[in-house]
Image (cartoon, rainbow, N blue to C red; front, side, top):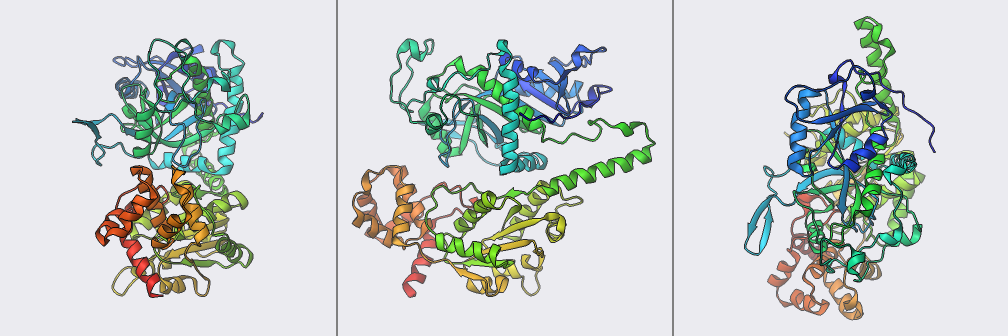
Length: 633
C-alpha cells in the first residue's frame, strides 16, 4: 500500500476556486465518489451554496490536491448530463475539467483481442453517439460527418492520456486504484466487495435473455459461455484493469450482444454508456466508468456497486496525475508581494515542466500488433545497429505493404518493455502537416514550453537535441516523398533538416525508396525482405477467424504466392474472408478469374488499426506495384 499523501489544498475563498467537477447519474455512483473525499467542505461554515437559477445539487470537498465539486444528475442520459453541465458554470465558473464517473456496459474483447472483464475500468479517449443518425429501411445509418461528430479531447487531456498509456504510469495508476478500492471495500454499506468470478458470465452474443423482469437465475439461462482466460488465470478475484479507448454514448441502455459486437467492429468502441455525449463537446471532459455488464440482454445489478467502486477509485487515481493550477495548491507565498509571487510561480512552473520532461514518454499512434509473426532476424539487426553499435540513424527500405511500419512498431514496443529509460516518439512523414501535428503532440506530452503551431518543429528539435530529453528513439515513418523528406529547389526545406541531433538519441526511418534511405541513413540501411512462406502461412492463419478452411496447405500456399507474401495483401485477404464468410477455394477462384475481379477483391475496404487512416486506401495499387517489382527482379 502506498504511503504518500498529497497536501490538502486550502479552502477556496469562493466558488471560483473549484476546478474539478465530478458528475454521477446514480446514487450508488455518487456514494463511491463521496467515500473517497479526503475532506468535505460542506461540513464547515459558511457553506458555498449556489447561484440563484442554478437547479443542480452539489457537494464540495477535496480529493488529493484538488478542490472538487460533485454534481448529482436528476436522472440518467445525455440530456440530463447536458443540463447539469450547462448550469454548473453559474455557480462554479472556475471548472476546468469534468469527470463523468459511474458504470457502463463493455465489449468483452477489444479489437486487439485484449479481454475486458466485469469490474475493469474504461477511460474515454473519444466519444461517438451511436444512436445519432437516420433510420433507413432495413438499417440505421449513423451520422459520422465532421460536423455531426463529437470532437477529440483537448491537448491537455490527450497528453495525460498518452502519459497514462506508458508502462510506468499505467502501473502507478493501477496501484493507486487498488489502494483506493481497498478503502471502499472497508465500508460495509457501500457493498464494494468483488461479487466473484462465477458471477462473471459472458454468454454467446446470439443467446438472448427472454424476460427483462427476471434474472438469469430465475429464467435458468444455460446458453454457451465464452471462455475468459483472465478469470481462469487470476482465480477468484482478478485485479481490475484500466482500458483507455473509444466509448459509445446513447440515450438508451444497450441490451443486445449482437448489436454490441456489430457496433464495436464498425466503430472500434470498447464500452457503452449514456451520459458522455451530453458533456463531451461543450466542456473538457473524461468519462471514467466501471464495467457492470457486457451490454447484452443478460444484465444483473449484482455488479453495479463493485463497478461503481472501481470507477471511483480509478477517478481518484487519475486526479493524482492531473496538475492543478498554482492557485489551487497550498501556496505559502500568498502573502508575498505580487512580484515575488510571480517569481515563485515561475520557479514552480519550471519545476513541474522539468519533472514531466524527466519521465520517459511513449508516443506511438498504433496499438501493438498481436498478429505480428517472424522477422526475428531483421529485428535483431535493428536492435544491434541502434543499441549495440550506437548508430544514430538507421533506415528500413522495402516495397509498399511489405511490413516496414509493423517492424518499426514491434521495435517500439520492444523498447518500451526492455529499455524503459528510453522515450519513444513517432512522426509520420506523409506530409509536412502530419509531421508538424506529431511535433505538437510531442510538445504536449513532454511539457515543452513556449511552443505553438508556428515553431512546433523547431521546439521539438531543440528539446530532443538537449540533454534534458534523455535517451530516445524517433521513428520517422513513411518517408517516401523525397521532396518532403529532403526538400526541393524553390520549396521549403525538408523535414530531415529539422530532425534533432543527440548522442542519446536514435532515429529510425521507413521508406520505399533506397535513394531516400541512403540520403538519410548513409550505409545504415536494412532491406526488408519478403515474408518467408512459413511466416506468411502463420500470419494468414492468425488473421483468420474461421480456422476450418485451413486444412488444404496447397490452396493456402498457392493463394499466398499469388499475394506475393505481401503482409498488407494477406491482411486484406483475411479481412475479406472474415467479413464475407466464403471459403478459401471460392476466394482463390475469384482472385484468379480476371484482372477486374482481382482488383475488386484487393480494393475492398477494411479496418486496420495498425495503419494511418489517410493511407487506408485500396490495397490493389500497392499490390500491383509490388507484384511488378518482384516479377521484374
